[in-house]
Length: 320
Image (cartoon, rainbow, N blue to C red; front, side):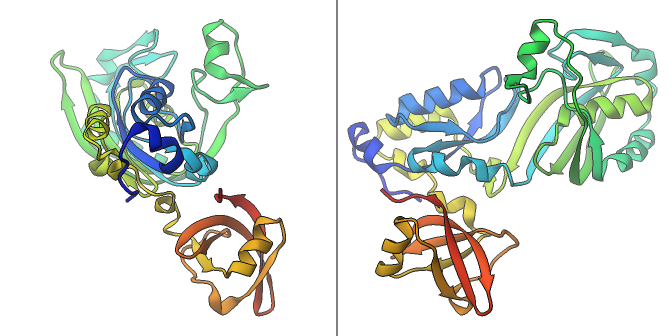
């Protein structure tokens, strides 16, 4: 973990890494970042992967130099636990939107066996249409802003991968309506609201997402996350740095190489560095390589193999 910080005044100079934040319901991802910025005193902060305001769970908040690699999170798989309510549809595909149709009588008679059968259609590589109320941009404008203005936009379908989809619970709520809880492990770009909506479409009764918890994002797990209250208390007590994971955390499945002082100087001045293949510690399937100098992550390099050598092309630099 990152070293502990003595005071907020030193934070901006010393803290870099990720806060594995357990986002609360009713708060936007942007406001969560603002709260972390206030708590840590580090101006350079941002999040990797928006969560809807009513969703909870893992929200990676990047601090300091870690903001340079927030886009690497977008390559990673995510896991969710979602609840869906059968018998209604909304314009946002969740319970918090405007209800556009009700068919509780059809939803109430859906059986567990039926929904198990339907889930088979949503495993593996699937095509889905993201919600009109989403952060996807059309001509530089988020779709949700266009939707709020009443502007109809044709949302393009996308191909995503659902690695795992399990039914966890199937029950009747207090009103006698059918609800189901599913666990989903999926690729980047997957909208759980769309899955819930499409399940309702296949069943013929409609469905909306009524709860959503992101349980993992890459190497960050819900059980290791912290709340804003816990984070604030830790910084007030002078141990906040212990809750900031180092930048290297998200690169555990990347290959890596250590370079010399001379190679470092070449690299930071924009030159390609050539190393023997034998020097590279090969892990995972990512093409980029983590470049270390004296045990600290210096940069991410793009590689080009040439016989028994590898050229490290400057790409993302974390040095001062």
